[in-house]
Image (tube, rainbow, N blue to C red; front, side):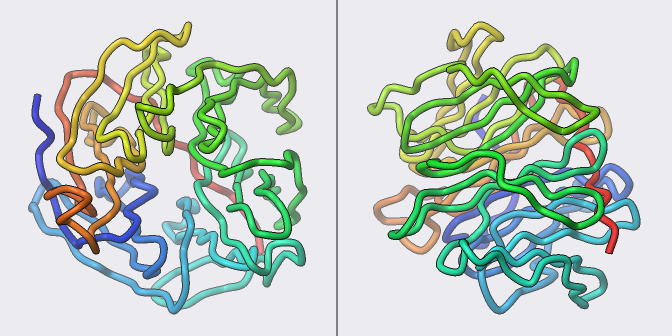
Length: 286
């Protein structure tokens, strides 16, 4: 099936597609321009509803419908009706960096990674319910996609420049991860593994930056299918729709379509009859 073009805002780095289960709408962003978008599949309408003066690397939904934004310099804030409420002003070790790819866990904590800097590599942090943050992984080349197995006992984590998706044991009670091992190594010719998600059958979907495609892996790391896109930089994906059988896919390179492809920077949808699993809400108290 060919991907269906939903909206084209020519995103420089379209990212973080996330289905809002209460609104039945799809949200996504453009990282460097700080633009947030949403799409209503019932009406077909979509909009750029907020633009931040600075980068937004990722977001989650809070129980009251507000957005928890992860930005540059380690800044985290809650956005609601155009107003920002600080959670963390900045992280001293991330003043030249930004967040990149985040995921809420079943309890409402958030795993949130940062980009590497000249002075230090990227890291993976965990934001706790009380708004405190701890570093849980270091020496990351490019922190990227995360996803839980359907039984919620394991966590996938992508380190793009290492060409690897890792698998960890995950303790829901404590939020800790352990027993790191390689789930799959992506050949360089296939691009860099970027955003990812896990479907209800436990298969892993990985977006491939500079690979023009999504790849679905079985739970043993074998490639099950590959779907090509008219964009080199396929950046992330999520399941949406009322039954979670629509796959929404973001792409990057919208500022250079001549080299990056006609669909670069656009949002796409696939209808394959495969069901996803619900994403979790963050529950950060401030």
